[in-house]
Image (cartoon, rainbow, N blue to C red; front, side, top):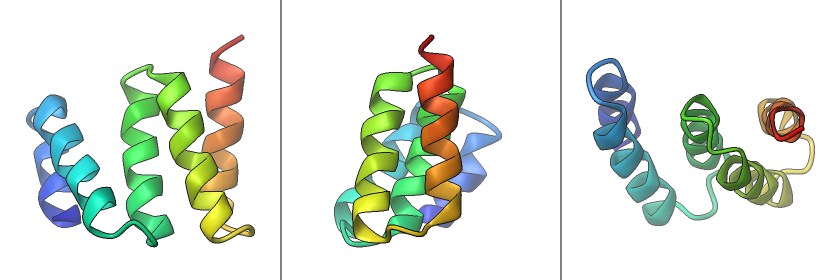
Length: 79
């Protein structure tokens, strides 16, 4: 599902968002799934959702650098 979301990202970000959200639901303990979703939320300028999603990824794996970086970006873009 993650790969389909990444492929769809180049064509339709709305479909990609649905696929990546489904991937995060199917794999709720996967920081990778959450980071992929958070990255897209941030790209779509949905900072509030991105902060929540990156926060969930960090809760699962506290040292996950991509999640930490994404959370910092999401916090910065809300200012």
